[in-house]
Amino acid sequence: MITSLHLPRIRNIEFLNNSILFIHLDNDRTLLVPLDKFPDIKNLSPAQKKEFEIIDDNNLSFLAIDEVYSINDLIGWE
Image 1 (cartoon, rainbow, N blue to C red):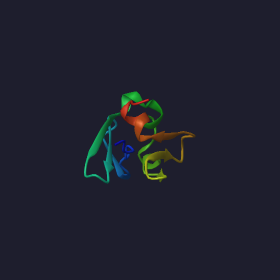
Image 2: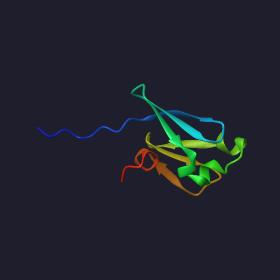
Image 3: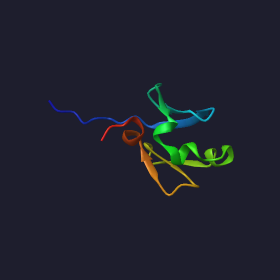
Image 4: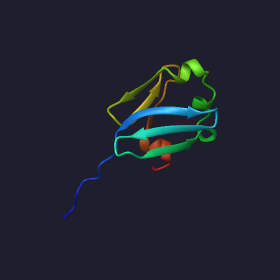
């Protein structure tokens, strides 16, 4: 039997200094994303980092960046 892969949903995000993005998921897991891999996010001001939106439960966008990041993008899956 083949079952579809369920992508977890993003509940919230937070930053540790200017080095790590924590992505809190609905399955009680937290992804740690090194911001060195995403210089556009790393270069945002603290105020700009607070201006984000979660799109369709598993995509993340910041108002100051013209980019939408999926969970797969953020964890390095293609």
